[in-house]
Image (cartoon, rainbow, N blue to C red; front, side, top):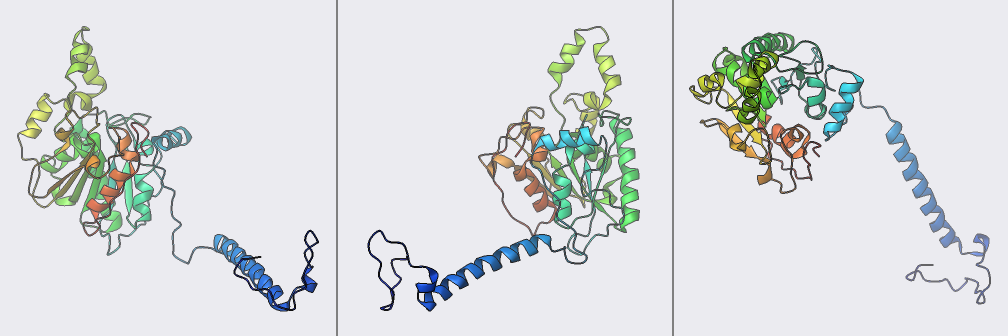
Length: 337
């Protein structure tokens, strides 16, 4: 009995230790209150179950799961190697007025679209974007993005044209990781003539100015023919070295091209782009983001950043400048979060 509940004068009293009177001996008002409570609980349960079972409204696409863990990328690669990530490559998708440009996702060196975009692709789709992804720079297989960057830029251009034709969009937005957000799109925009087809470039731990691979290359030099063999196996690797002829030629150009908006998103704990500030660009239409400036719990590294909710939230902000939401959650090296 609630302490605030008053007992009617007609309520039978019971001696200490005796049984509580059955419902039939309780006042009608109390029985009605209990009945209403039970019916209310039952009604809420029925409503909840009906809501779960109710089909989505006509035309409403179900929301896709967004797993913030690199383990999801590994699992997807094991289950369906080389497949498009959830939400990507619907060539019947038509951009909306709110998001008028399709988004193309570019994996990094030795990655692929399957293991890289199990989080960002469905996140973009859930937010109303037409999303596309491709494997570039390699023969069909687990590893991609190792081929000559100029050849990869030609592949990208063909895919951009295919997406533009399918969606009716004049321009696309590019979002890439490592090479896919740095050296490759920089070459595509500044050398290969892609600038007129791109509105936004968003890089996640991008190799904008290369990476310091000197220690690895010096180790290869200790073996006769080691560096030459490595260059044949992974031209894009040696091209992205900070001191390579490719990066020197690219860095001799301005960082940006007119008409393209740039957002470079990086972690202080990147162990590949060292120092991490090599990821950043200089120019009038550039925004450089360090994820730890928004979240002290973010320990993502070069791999984890593509499964890091802080970084991926900044991708949404970059593609839609009217959106200024901030996110913060624990994110671990390699795993993300």
